[in-house]
Length: 331
DNA sequence: CGTATTTGACCCTT
DNA sequence: AAGGGTCAAATACG
Image 1 (cartoon, rainbow, N blue to C red):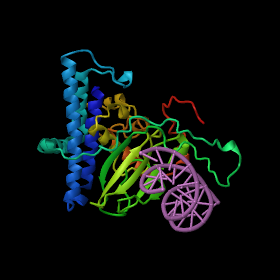
Image 2: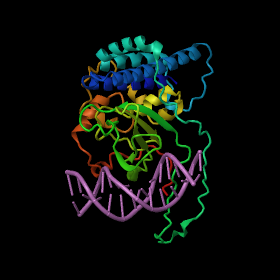
Image 3: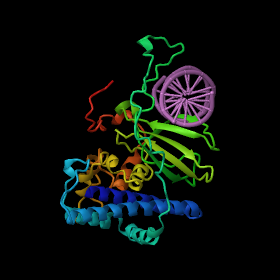
Image 4: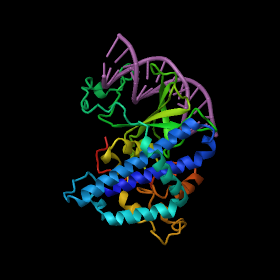
């Protein structure tokens, strides 16, 4: 539970970092800056809410509800708070100060309502009776096999992201993952087409993560990015700014408490050289260790490292083991 | 020459 | 049936 709070805050911080980076570009784009700020505000609000929730339930009753997180995340609340503060102070001192001010400023008027997508698809059509079993022949004439198309019940996370002010504005900004476009479609009622991306490493790790990008007709400078599926690869080869903060952000805004915690490994972040670190420690070997799961707090460091290498995937295959996917079914 | 994107057809969901 | 999502051949790109 508490690590949820920490994660939330962390996400907010990542967002804030992003904003800071884009500050020069956003300077003359009040709309987008406002959007970005709203996102950050929203993120912090979510974190705060969770924290209050947590502390409330922690001191009144001790019937800690069985959250769906790993058991390794059972940490002492005090400890968490301390470590969290430590982390906040050590790695993001300046920004954090401003951010908290910002937060207080905007706390009252959180206006952004992303993540209110059509989430009413509670039930899934698990077996869409895929009738013709394409008798496994090499009959490539007319009927295409088409295996499992729409993965059953994949939750969608929707987020708005401002278009980059420089370079190719046709493309949404980097989000920390490498995507490969596999389709584009005109959408009814939208001026702009919607593009479909899937994770570049889908083959390697059966990474089912996908996203679709659509720029709003109201404001072409803003993309609506919808994420689907989880990354089973934890790769960040072309990361410009950070992690898939969209996912994270949306998670906050819709109280989707269980999806994210399974993707992040909350505990290892907490062991971030609290205090003595002085920032630049662990730069040589340390980061590689955290590459697999929880390198989120060290995003800048990780980025610095990853950015230097381009996208040569095959050489890294052994580095990115399929993680803890305890699902041996391999088709 | 291998990899990524484009694009129309195909198929699934509503 | 319409609209949306995906496939895969063709093409572009490095």
